[in-house]
Image 1: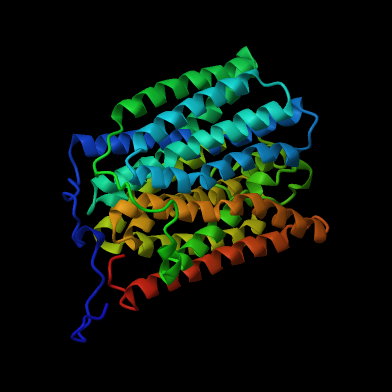
Image 2 (image 1 turned 60 degrees about the vertical axis):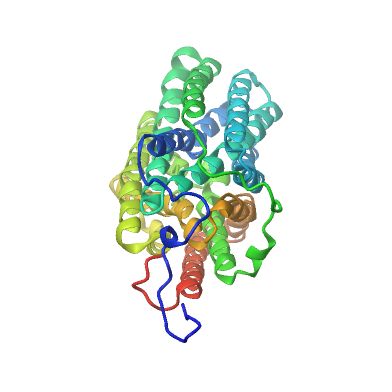
Length: 439
């Protein structure tokens, strides 16, 4: 940064920016209680999302709709989660984080138990896709925002530690559905999952506490953010990340999975590939998902610690996104069970690191922490179109190539590398070419 007298200076860390409110405590019981509640919320949001592959497999055997039609249930769930974030983010800044989380908890419970009663496609679409998706959108962003207000020097570590909840949910929910459905039936398996959700939301609502005074004034959308070029480049990079990271999740066709490996955090496609093409049992396929989520759990918190201590969240995010793109280029070479496990673990680590660091990056681009919820929500709403359109783009590329996945692989890998370039440009505009700046 350039001062008025012409001298240069490095960008100030967010923790050194003067605030009207008291400085974040950076620890203590109440602060870490928010991390614990955030862990549970991430399990109920992205952990729940990462379990949809198990639901998809069951629905394909019980519903007359095609696999691609069924995948819209999961697609709308993620779209609702992201799209509603502008509303929940601004409401959080206005002091309504706890009401948002409570309302989202109710939607989650109603949607889960209605899923256990649903017998038709449209009932499942409304219960699991719309109702649960809205509930997740009302819970996730307020939690991340509240955590960010309790920490400054340890902010990214706190957010990424909470993000390990994605792996927790991604291990628990698939195991419950997969192992209980043959014994007590799918409806009761979902009800058992609903009881787990009930316990979680009770603990969440007991733990959540807001710290900052509400920001009553201000619009739902902060239009000045669109004049911030670094913010817009960051948003574009995140859009490409979501656009490509989820296309396999929504375009599910077992009949064309000859050389297909998933590029999702939940790796449902890897399960299908393992069971249909490599001869693994269905239970072994679910165990593979659990292993991958466990790998993701191990990487998130260390990445957050390194980002807080030495590197900064944006500097940490960039190489992980680039690695995701490179690994997608490599996936076409995988043709055996051993190669599948190696690829899955490496991509699980890279994608978990990228998605875990994202939530902690926006605060580093926002000087006024009272606007964190609004700015993060705007990013998520703008990127919500990605998970809906990405699968269609992939499907068109595969169809035009006569079932050859190479064009889709090139599209996904290239998009992630373009996302990397956009994130680098955002970082340079925000702090210049001084690579030692922690950002």
